[in-house]
Length: 398
Image (cartoon, rainbow, N blue to C red; front, side, top):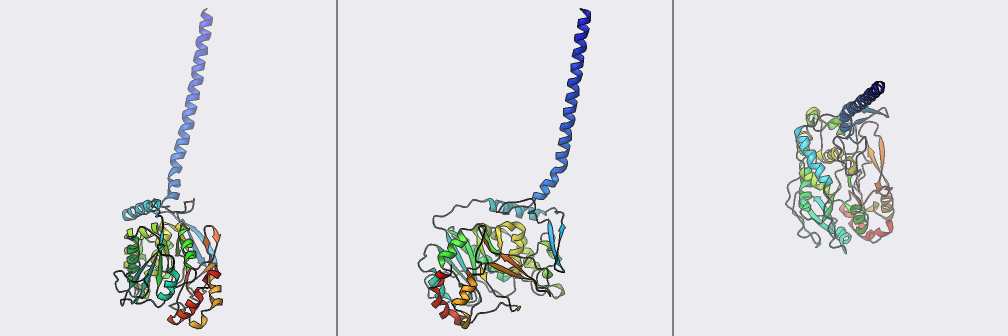
């Protein structure tokens, strides 16, 4: 009996020891995984920091790589994300909430056509033909910077907003664009916003333009990297830390913008101040910076790069390499001209260095390559009669 009790006691002790060993081993393994998880967690968060794209975020959407163009070679440099300032953090919070905002879709959404002009519109007759028959699907806003426009079209009469003087190359250009956006946003039915000049004309029928803009979930905003003197050569270190040179971008000022992005523009004050104060003609070293070419491309590249097209739906011909784009004459405006223009499906971006490198951005619409342009500029007023005569044939150019 005594031997049996001793064997039972020994067996119990052995079982207790084995159980203790298993518990210790389990605790050790669990602790090891917790330590590993804790150690690697900050790296995961850093890779996701600042990703607010309306198109979703991948593993490399933090723009942690800088592409340098040198001797026709591209070099990728990994960057370490910096800590945001308090103002940046506040700004990003607002941007994040607006991008997540599910706006109520009106029964009949409208496109806002915003004309930034010096005075009267020489192509008002053409725009009247463009809008005719599509009432309730569009709104018109006119910002005249020099003289009060004289209108004859019912679509334009009474559509002038409070305007201020605008000078080419000055920040007043951006302020006028914001003024147009602010007035257009007052109408909750306006879901997409188009910026146009007095020399712009439509090259597609209204219904084509309407579907092209409203059936897409992006803003058609030009944005590209130009490391030449008239691109990143305009950057100045005073923009730091909020705007770093690696994020500085260039693009045409003629944009179309979805409502969420228009709201973000109205909410921004931090980055707007940086460009107002440090991107202007006559900077240090004789450099000239033009905010209308850099503010929107840089801003949206930083806060929602996946939500913009990186090309403009307004055609402009910079082939002459001058300060202003080429203007078209009456002799050039014919069927062949419009057919060629409306068949273009890549957007050229020309660098401002000596090599004048041309990079082509494919025009993608909902995952498919499509024609790039809905509008075009610049046209001399003398082209009006030819354009009006050709307008009835626009529908054949789809």
